[in-house]
Length: 393
Ligand code: CTP
Image 1 (spheres, rainbow, N blue to C red):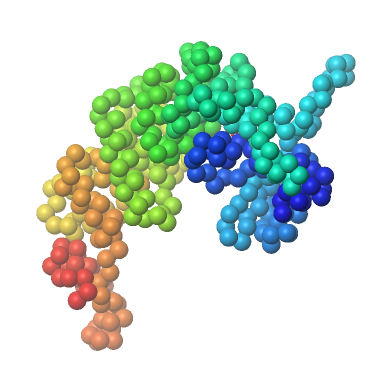
Image 2 (cartoon, rainbow, N blue to C red):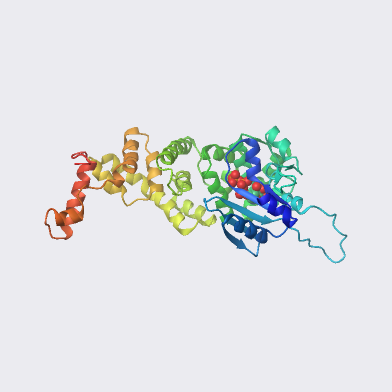
């Protein structure tokens, strides 16, 4: 239907970018980006009407998001057609708006497009040799100034190279090394660097990407005093496993999985340095506090857990902590026994409810409501956690 709508309006529409790249590579990707050679907001409104979907339009950027009744979404953007010409300039060679749009992008593998008009449906469009680069397993920039125009692409190049096990093209590698050497990161807003680092921490294996960043001296160029040694790497590996465990056990969870990885990166650094790094990255206040708390509180908390004689002591220690903190805590100890207890807190103890409720105390046991209620209910809860009474008794 999208293809027909495009055809009827006489507009060309294409799926572009990451979705097409991942389709060819064979990796799951649910982010559908559509570019139209025309007004994307008008187009998206028509699509939304056809599918009974919701549409959010951003008129300033001529982009729109359509959210379908089943929760799926598609982002629409208008291929940039505006041409800035100075009065005396020679007329520009006419170029398809799609090509102009794709030309601004980072790597050839991200410039593939698939036409979705009913006529020509499924036609692959490859202006910059992206298909060959996918086959050759290469990350290549489109032009020599790519990293200068946007130094965050340094991080993206190494993230994609790690994710797909691709190599950097040799010219691209030279340009990247030069960009790092010239400290181009200094010219970028910290929050854009943070955004890309966050994407790295959300990859399946952040450790491997950080090793690459270290190899290309990116880590030390971003964080002058940072240690990236055996200890940090082992912690990252344990954290990766804890996060996989968490995602398997709590598939609906919407916690910020990048935060414990940032905690792990900075845990052993001087508190003042961490503060400086996080300010440089303009990390949002809430996340900054969370990461700083991790650095401050992990070791004392682990010590108290190791000393705890009863499960309920661990429960009391952890119940005020965020899940992000607890994931890092679970990855921290080398002792499996301590780790098991922390994971058990998440899996079982956290949600233990005594079978007797406040209402029962009033109705069945004829007690008067008061502070004693909380005490009784807590005692019952602790008894279950300490395995003194079975849960359903
Ligand atoms: N892009 C770019 N330069 C950047 C960031 C993004 O050129 N600094 C372009 C890329 O070509 C990319 C598109 O914008 O294909 C969308 O960016 P994003 O959603 O971040 O990338 P994806 O390719 O979808 O990557 P991922 O699979 O990690 O979501």
